[in-house]
Length: 319
Figure 1: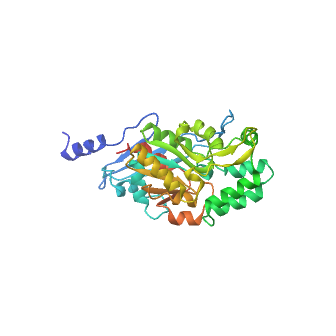
Figure 2: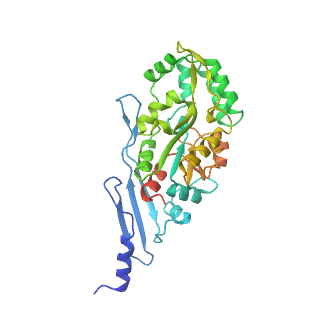
Figure 3: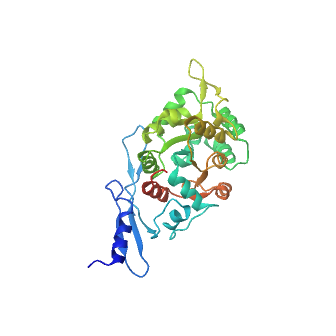
């Protein structure tokens, strides 16, 4: 005869997230004095893609173990956080950021040093022999030590890239995706969350990245370089919101109002990304490429890879 306690446990198991081939998990259940569930989630092989290139470099699969409490009402931030209590987390309000990610209907990503593992304008400057001069200005801008519009104007004035310069740069040095970001974007889109690329970089350089990730180019908010009829550099469009300091909050506000999103998360490595909360409900700082202390101090949650974010998205439908 099946005991009442056993029936209750079986009912509990039926509430667990489904295990699919797309998100392979192995669930181990222990019915001791304190019931618990353990999910072992091997991540798929991470791909470091180069846009417009068939060369993929692969890294070894990563295996992580996440504990799950028996309290399965995961709409509360504390319940989500408890799944990862065995890991060390950084940030001012990690539980809240996890909850916002779990139910976000839009996630906005910075591109340089977040979606890609380098600064696009620095790559362009390197190909034009102006690398050190430009990277110094980039560091100042990303650390928040200078107004972004001043740094942007100074860097462009140094390199003055033509349309052919940019095309040649992307051919010689296709921008590299940060490991795991392709799986995170795929997971977000699979559950119906809109993905945007909001960057102080250049639209011409970001469009190939968006196509690689399957993000519609209409979801790019970035800077537009202006050229004359010969394709020579003449300036940049100062009407783009991302061309100035406090530009990312303007871009996110426009996105939120246009589409009517309820919950929006910003992910990025720089000071301008931290400025995006509000209107973003949470700011997740990314330190997988470079750690900026000023950004870490302002982040609701500061991550150094995308693995836990991917796991949260896979386990939670947007609410």
